[in-house]
Length: 114
Image 1: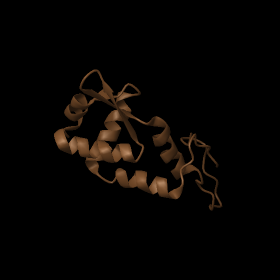
Image 2: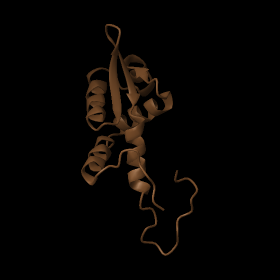
Image 3: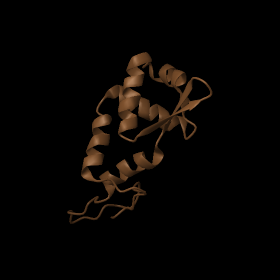
Image 4: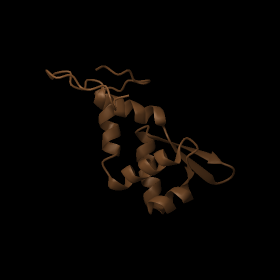
């Protein structure tokens, strides 16, 4: 089954994004932001919910941001809001499923792929 992605990933970009998720803390940060929805969270709230704070959280957010998986924006004077780049996360998921069962004699079921 072929699935269309809003922003098709090439192998290099996909590998970079998966490498960014190669840390339990970064994966936890991303999952927390996914749960928060499109409004995101302040860095303080994100730190409280994940248990990752200070320079460690800043480091992880930089890696996730560079990989295109999260966005950050200043609100007011100093509050930083963090949110998931849902299109990129969707593209990453689609990258894995685009050629699902392509080389299999048995076709994948349509459920849960889209």
